[in-house]
Every structure is written in C-alpha cells, then in structure tokens.
Length: 217
Length: 352
Image (cartoon, rainbow over all chains, first blue to last red; front, side):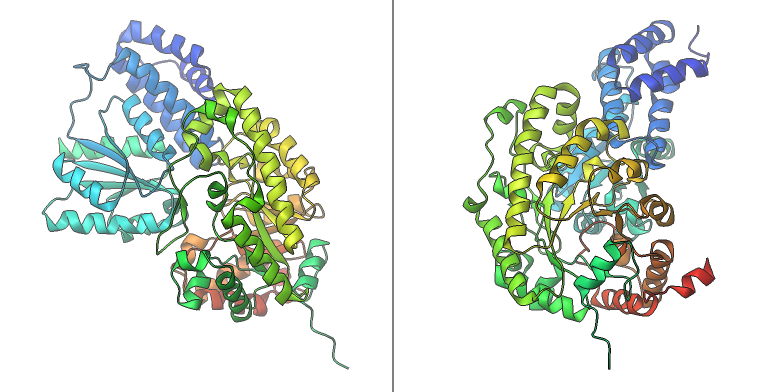
C-alpha cells in the first residue's frame, strides 16, 4: 500500500473501536502495521486525526464519555512519540503554539488538547497552570502565534478578556482559542471575551489549529 | 375560612410523592449571592456561619425560595483531607493543587474526623442555626460529594482516570475511604438539621464515563450510599448527562435526580415518572445574559416539559448559580414560577 492510498473503512473502524476500548495493544498493532507500509505522516493524517475527530464529535453529541476521549488522545500521543519523536525532522513546521489552563488545577482539558495536537504532529508549548500575568508574559516571550486556553469556571473564562486587552496594548494579536465547560453552556461567551475561536472538543482544537496555520503560512 | 398557605416543605414533599402541589417548587441554589446581600467578600462570607445563615434567610425571603441551601463550596471537602482551597472575589473557591501526588499515597490516607475540621464544623453550625430559624417551613439542603467524584479534587482528573484504568487495587481503596467519609459527613449534616443531602456525582454522568463504567464502578457504591445516608438523597450530576442511566438510577434509591440542560427535559421526565423526581434544568451560565422576558420563557419551557403530574423541582442544572447572575434575573425567575408554576398547569396542556 502506498502513502497515497486511503485506509479502508473497516481498518479505520477497527482503530476507532480499539481506541474507545482503550486497547493499547490493538492500537499499537494497527499503527505499527500502517506506519511500516505508509510512513508516519500517513498514519497521522489518515488514521489518527480522523479518528480523534470522530471521537471528539461523538463526545460533543453525548454518544461517548470524556474518559474515552481522554484515553484515546493519550494512547495516540504515546504512539506518535514512538513513531515520530519530538526532535523528528518530520514534525510539522509551524509557528509557535501554546496551551495553558487559566487559574485552575483541573488540567484534563489541557492535557486532552495537548495529546490531540501532538498526536496530530504539532509541537506545543505547554504552560501548565497560569494566571493572567504569567500567560501574557509567556506569550510575549515565546512569540506565540496561537494560544489555546482551557478554563473550568466562568470567572476564569471572563479573565481571557484581560489577556486580549493586555496583548493588544503591546501590539500583539495572537489567535486566542478557548475551550472548557463555560463555553459549552454559553455559545456567545468566547466572542464576549475577545477570543478568535472556541472549541467544543479536542477534535475542534485540531481543526481550528490546522485552519489557522493554513491562514498563517 | 381561608386555607392555610402551603409551606415550602409541604410543597416539596407533595411533588416528591409525584402529586401536584399548589405550584412547582423553586430551588434557587444560591451560595455566593449571600455575600453580595451582606456586602461581604466571598471569602469572609464563607468563613462565618452566621453570615451564611443571614444570607440564606435573606435570599429565601427575597426570592421566595423553597429551600435553604446549606452549601458553601465543593472544595470544602478537600480542606477536610488537608488540601488547599483558593478563594477569589468573583467566583466559588476552588481546590488547589491535588494533595495526592502519587497513587501510592492512597494506601496511607485515613478518613478525616468531621469534628476535627473547622470548615466542616462551620457548615454544621450553619445548618444547625438554619434549622433553628426554619421551624420546619423549608427543606434545608446540605451537600456531600460522591466518593466516586471526590478523587477529581483529591488527585486531579487526569491522574484519577489513569488510576481507574491502571490501578484497580488503589481505586478500590480510595473509594472505600471516601465512602466512609461521605457517609459520616452526610449523616453529620442530617443530624445537625439538614432535611436532605444533595449528592454531587458529576463523574458518574455519561458526559464523563461510559454507562458500563458507571454500572461497574459507581452504581453499587451509590446504591450503598443511598442506603447508608440517614435521609433523602438527591443524586446530582452537576450539568452532566444522565439520560442513558435513567433505569439504573431508579434502582439506586434516590428521591431526586438533578438533570442537565444538555438533555431533553420532557424525555427525562417520561423516564423518571413515578420513580423519582427531577431537579433542574435551567442554564446557570447563560442566565448571566437573560433579561426578564428570557427568564420567563426559560421557566415556562422547563415547567411545561417536566411540571405536569408533580415530581419536579425547578432549579439550575449545575447546583450553583454563578456569582455574575443578577438579582433582576433571579427575581424574574422567581416571579415566573409564581405566575406559570401554579397547578393545575392548564396552559401547558393547551400549548403542548
């Protein structure tokens, strides 16, 4: 099979089921088989990204659980680290992207986004838990082009506006992508706080980043 | 001769018996707004039982609320285990860095003694004072975090999901000690005068785990909890979905289930009818933008979906209304319930 060929729906479905069942052995076997035949990027583009997208949409529709989304992303990230180490020249050449949790120790959302993006071949600055001051400082220092901000609570979501205003004041306008529970319950909130986009799921994060990078490059 | 006015407690008990009371009961689950009422900071408010009592008394009258909500903040239970709580001026105090940093620490955890924890004693004092003021008029709703959900704050969500998937031995131990704490804490609050326990269990929702995981890991535990807690229990998923679990929930022994705005309230009601009552499902986050007309429309929609036949208490879907929701909106919700929630709900039958 050449890298131009598409995977069969049966193979994709088998991979999806293995992810949803958190079956690492089956996931590794499928990925290794296809990576040997088509190269790591085909695996990412044809197998991992579409599967994680499907999983993200299924969670958004209430069809699967967050635990399944988390485990799927984590397993894919582990596999990608194996077949495409961080220093690999085959990683996607991209402007700096960062991810952070604002004012909270609930890191799961950030972890899932990081996993999905890394599993899709992107390099990510992971700032962990930050407050407004630190995030603004890091974005300026690292010349971040896209910053993904995860929040759990409404007051933290409202603080994103301060980040936008402070970056505006120093003449920087990175793309701010937000996600987390408050945005799922108020569809207009991301616009109110000056974000450029809002992701409802990990798959949204990958889609949004991919689109923004196309616009940037 | 005039008929004596129905008390909030009577109203709630009637609806819980799946009959129609005089009107749909309203539980405005307000915590931080009490600080606003008393012109105190949120931290100062939650650190004083007398303030929480004064706040609840004032808000019950102002909004004609059908309950006292004897709840401060979820991270209080982390305090009990020695964890850090971070206060802020514009929202609920949050749990700090998880205190279980390595899974093996679970082996040395011991169940905290309720009376040794100042924050828990403060809540017991709050309940006790509310009980003294109440004279049986309103149900006093206290809160306990479910043993299955507490680990999210104890060790972090990610580490907990890893534990579930990779260390069943330590998971079992953690759930056991959390169960003992939860039973002790819930029963202490009931002994202090609480009428019922709102048992927050967001992790058991199908938003978070699969129905299979719920059945395997939580259902036996929650069934035992409903039996061991010495009063009525409301299972609350804190905005999480539960429609696929409705048949299971009927079997757990809960009187009430708190439901999400992300699911169809009418469909939920059809599943719950005659088995348990529903609490919900107004969108607290969106409430921040509601004007009085929108508030009225949302209240009407919820009452039309779940009000007929009783078995329904109108509330928000998360179990805590954000600090940013205005008094005007809360008053509009309250007025709308009094206008549209009066039984029999003939308007709802005509509109359906």
